[in-house]
Amino acid sequence: MTQEKKITVKKQAYLVNDEIADNIRRLMKEKNKLFFNIMGSIGAGKTLLLERLAEKLSPHYKIFVINGDVATTIDADRIAAKGATTVQINTGGGCHLSANLIQKELDKINIDDYDIFFAENVGNLICPAAWDVGAQMNMVVVSITEGEYVIKKHPIIFKGANIAVINKCDLDGLGFDSGTLVEDANKIKSDMEVICTSAKTSLGLEALIDALGIQLP
Amino acid sequence: MHEYSLASAIVEQVKKIAQEHNASKVKTIKVSADPYEMVIPDLLKEAYGIIIDELELFKDSNLELLILPAEIICIDCDYKGEPSIEGDDEFAYNFRCAKCGSRDTHLNIRHLTIETVDLEILE
Ligand SMILES: Nc1nc2c(ncn2[C@@H]2O[C@H](COP(=O)(O)OP(=O)(O)OP(=O)(O)O)[C@@H](O)[C@H]2O)c(=O)[nH]1
Ligand SMILES: [Mg+2]
Ligand SMILES: [Zn+2]
Image (cartoon, rainbow over all chains, first blue to last red; front, side):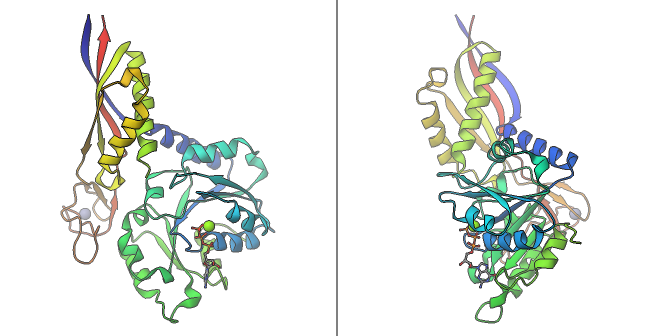
């Protein structure tokens, strides 16, 4: 004899991910560490910005960067050359990082050896938005060469961001325009910091470090 | 493209629930998702089909997906609920508070939730 039974569950499917993410956030806070999730479009300049940040910060802080890409270790190698410790996660077909992938990397190191943690998410303005990685702040990088409507076309990821970085502003006025992007970013979320940068010339780097809440002596 | 990870998260959770209830078969799983969680229903079903292919417990089971209405939280007046407008000519997702009309809103994305599971239980 069998019997049918309806079970009311009301439970998040990837509760597991959010639980791991919350644990990471709690641990980082307890240990007085900073952890930032850097998301953004393909080729927006996430890695070059991290190179600049590593140059600027590593004389004063120990930096650990987790790079997420579908394939290669190019980004991790680039940032490592600037004084940070890096590790590359290859997601295979995966279009985003998740908390368990971050946790796996954190398990391999001693968190106390570092002060500031960054995750460079997979270049993608859609999927990473739905996956909490346990960071204290989410930052989204777009660049002015992607066209003036890139924020309008991908508003959701900005809804969950603390900082919007409009990169490649060295090209501002040279056939590209940052104006609409800045305006759109401010309209989408008024409590989000909007910063224009150039990872090439380091324009706006100090403002970015400030927005991240990192003190430089 | 994250439908595969979602489908496997669902299967993992339901496996546990089935065990707790001594179930011999999983019949129907109902899940709900936020419209802005960007789950593509067909892809989710396809991924589910692939994952359960060799799982006896899940044989012939059904995954039903319910897309919920959007929910916002107003920064100006703390309203929480459906927006009055989701988009307009200017912005595709230019949500507007249904109470005070403000555009200063946060999107409250509710993560994919397993609502109910129908199980067959051996007596
Ligand atoms: N002119 C200019 N070029 C930049 C700037 N930032 C990055 N680039 C260039 O843009 C290209 C992509 O930069 P990356 O830093 O690799 O971009 P990314 O966002 O890490 O790319 P993915 O990880 O592949 O998604 C490189 O050729 C950089 O040299 C900038 O501020 N100005
Ligand atoms: Mg990169
Ligand atoms: Zn309101």
